Image 1 (cartoon, one colour):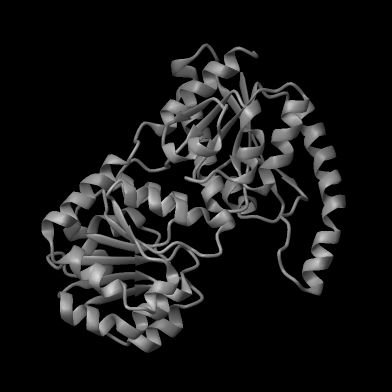
Image 2 (cartoon, one colour):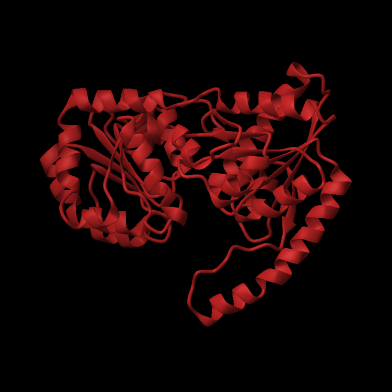
Length: 375
C-alpha cells in the first residue's frame, strides 16, 4: 500500500492540482508500480475551499486551524493576527500526530499557507517531500522548502530563477479533465450563441472580476459594433444582477454568473479575456486559446503578472495591467488581434504549445519512484 499525504489549500489553484495528482495515482499505481494500491490523506485549513472540494472528490481531509497572516489594518485584522501563534502551535501538534499515525511514504506540497506546517513536520519526521509549483514566481512555501525537497515540479521554466540549488523539473500544471467533448455548434447552442460568429470569452474567475466587468459594461456596445463579435461573459455571482441590469437583453451577449460546463465554453471561445491565475492559464493552454490577460493586482507577490508575462513571452497572450484599462489600451489590442486571423492563429498555436498534457502522469511517475525508496 502506497501512502501519500497531500498538503495544500486556501484557493482552487492549490487544491485542484493536488486532486488531479491524487486521482491519477489511484488510476495508475497498481498498473504501473510494485504497490498494490494507494491510500491518500489531505491536509488543509479548516477555513479554505478544501473543506468542500476535497470531501466532494471522495478524499479524507485533516483540517488544521491554521490561517494566513491578515494584512488588514483594522481591529479585526489585529485580532486575527494575535490568534495566529496559538493556531500555529495547535496545527503543528495535530499535523505531527496525524503524520505519525498515517506514516506516509511521501508528502506532496502544492502550496498555500495551509501546506507549510504539514510539509515542515514531514521533514522533521524524515518523510520525503516533493513540491508542485503552479506559478511563474514561486510561492513562499515553495521558496522556503524547495532546497530540502526531493523534487520540485514546475509549471513555468521562469520559476527556476528563484529556486537556485533545488532539484526542479518542468512538468506543467496538473489538470483534471482531458479535453472538450462535443463541438463548437453544440457549445454555441448551450449558451444561446451563434457558432459562426467570432466569440470573446470574458472570464473573471468563479467570483468574477469587478474591474473587468465595469470596463465591459461601459464599452461593450462599442466593441460589438466595431468588431462584429459576440461575447460569452462569466460575471461572477456577486456582479451578475448588476451586469444584467446594465447590459439588458442582447442576442450577442450571453451573461452567466458561473459556468459549470467550462469545456463547452472553451470550445466556442476564439479569444479569452481573463485574470492570470495558474489553473485558468493551464486550462486555456490545454484548449489552445489565445488571451488578453489582466492580472489581479492584489495577488500575493504579484504572481499573476509573472504568470501573464511568461504567457506573453511565449507569444500566447497580450498583457494589460488593470490601471491601463481606463487609459484606452484595451480596444487597440483587441482590434489588432481579432481583425488579424494570422495573429490570432499564431497566438492560439503558441498557447497550445504551452500545454503539458502529460503533466499529471509525469508527476505521478516521480512520486512513485521517490516513494519506493522509502517504502
